[in-house]
Length: 115
Length: 112
Image (cartoon, one colour):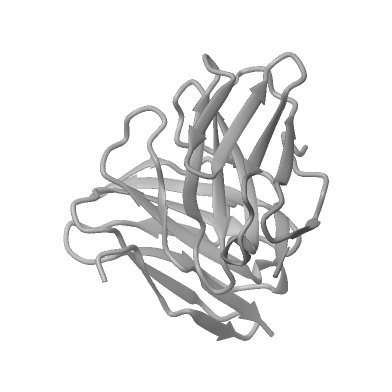
């Protein structure tokens, strides 16, 4: 499968635990984007990364959330000390370049449930 | 502040008929618009896009119309097929940015 791979598909955490969401972009894509979809809402931009660089994290909550895209391996979205309000579907997308009007290719998402 | 609005949460259409999904936006700086389709348990899949320099773009059974003065776009699917049943998201961006603003989606059900 050469598409965007996200794992796990479902993640259950108790309040206060950490959540780690992984994303492997499509082959040949070096640009990764994370979006979050809260219940009954549209997808909302969180962060844009290239290899080893955070380009734009303006959509990330100021605390507890971080993202990385290391030279080797998948991109990681990390949520520390999760709260119930973090329950959402987290989608990763990738694109071959970062040019204007790039088409984004989305993964199947990780559904995070915080108990 | 919902800059992209899809006011119809759901729509049912008979197979073979036209499906019309609507999207309104408030930001006059938006100059690029896309439609994504999403099946359950899958990620959104790109369907069709339109730049603000055009008022229509067609791809097979799918046509997107843009009315800039009304800040309104619509997706027409003709003829509708049961496999088109999915959630459709409208998205917009300004100045070539990757920060697409998504609507809340419309769930289309095509009845056989």
